[in-house]
Length: 263
Image (cartoon, rainbow, N blue to C red; front, side, top):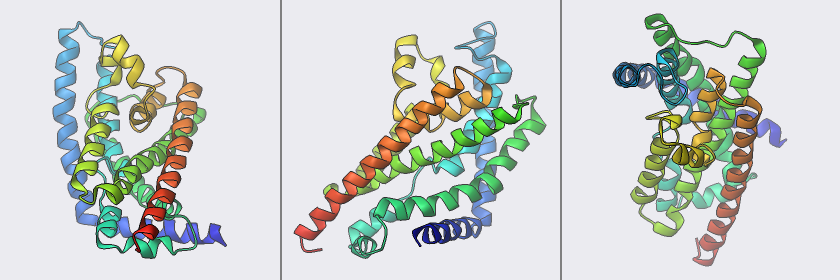
């Protein structure tokens, strides 16, 4: 019964995302412009460094840029505040009355949204980059399977991070602080702006094992074949499980707080 419910929620998330056609096209255009600018900056940096930084050459860097920009839509990098607003208005009390847990309900919907974003935004946007530049593309079926697994693990990790930011509103009331902090951390520490291997070795060794790296740098590394693919997928899976467990624990604490306050 619950499997059917999750399927319907995912279908709803898909339909909802596809209804914003103009926003999808605008997002693709904006991200493509940023990819052109970011790519030019990285290529200039590589030329100044005599062709290589952190294991990236020019082709790696351009592929990274277009991949990272393509992931913005599926991962909802800049997040959403729908749950936070429901917490402020008290409508979240209805969510707790549903037959599944709060994180499970929202995750199922987000998976549908992300699937639509992959098909109608991420893939076309990467193809634009591939038409403009000579980007690296996996050549084996096993690599593509690993890329698909890594991308969906990234969706779960990003969702859980955003969910924790939204759930924090139970205690802060005002959503702007926790949501802004979460977005800043995700953009700054995930490899969205700069490949993490561009940082000094001590910083890179720390950043690559933090949860934010599992959202962007992980899928990029798997796609490019950098590092150990099984290790990257394992770390992503570990963070996906740990963060989803954290969302359930925080949601239970929030439910208790709501009940105690008479919500």
